[in-house]
Length: 121
Image (cartoon, rainbow, N blue to C red):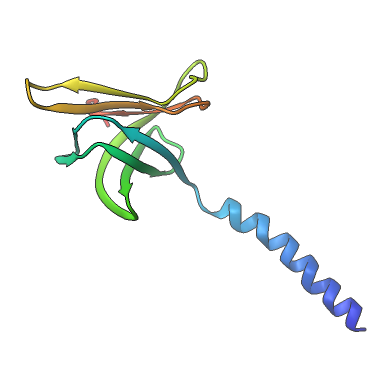
């Protein structure tokens, strides 16, 4: 009888673990920003960031997490590229002689890209 009880507990656990993984639709990627940039009204310093967004797009809200703290949020368009790239690509747009604006992030070995600052988002 004890074996049946333990088998039921293990079976329940085995079924719940995959379901919990599917429950959230959060997407996370790591990206290294090499230059100071402006995103969503916030200046980001160069460094390693976790980029997180909810949903499957096309319009998503993106959070930039640095050292465990959310330091900026901005709307973006999640788009699919035709092919996978071989390295992270952070596309910047120079707004003036001293300022750069984050325009796009393409993720290594992914077909996803986040595009910032487009009208209609």
